[in-house]
Image (cartoon, rainbow, N blue to C red; front, side, top):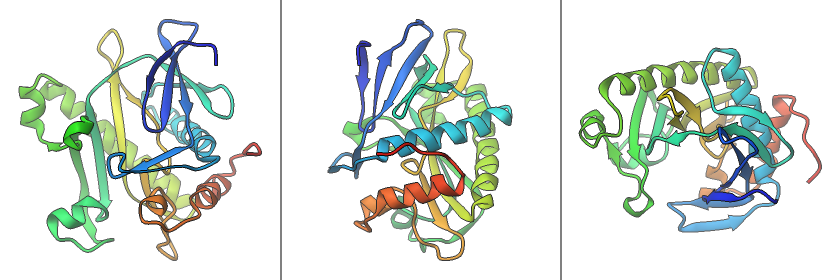
Length: 239
């Protein structure tokens, strides 16, 4: 790779592109969990996330969601809009799983009367703490209008993804997304949407098909990511 590296995260590397308004997003095989406490390298994971994220981003674009995605360049790289990333993780919970079960003493899989949106402040040193709207405005991260826009976009994204996964017999339990701003202040969906960032259960068996397979030592992560790609009829390269 001959482009200048901008940033390296847990699962991706960002490089400069030919245009100053664009960057290249490279998907690594690294797997991490519990704020980087658990680590491994899983051959093919980055390729699968790249292809699945491309597929889902294109679905969202067709449904009038503004995203940073431009095109997939090859097995591991995407060309995306250069954005100033908002330091928030936006979590959508349709059913109880993960940390909310411990936090609120809920049963895994429990249904909610409506989707729950949570904001987490992106800071590894603080373990990405949950914050509320008042924190966000008081810290100058976003104003009230921008928060409301992100909430409404997130709910739209949720409905689209629920429908797409239901078509392939998968229940969307929860997912994490991020947003960024362009130079004019317009807000776009950023990062990725993949089995790394979603909890996905088979509708018939409730079998976990996402990164919980790595978190919980369930094994066969690539096998299940590949199954998701196959159900979407995504053509994959050999790896």
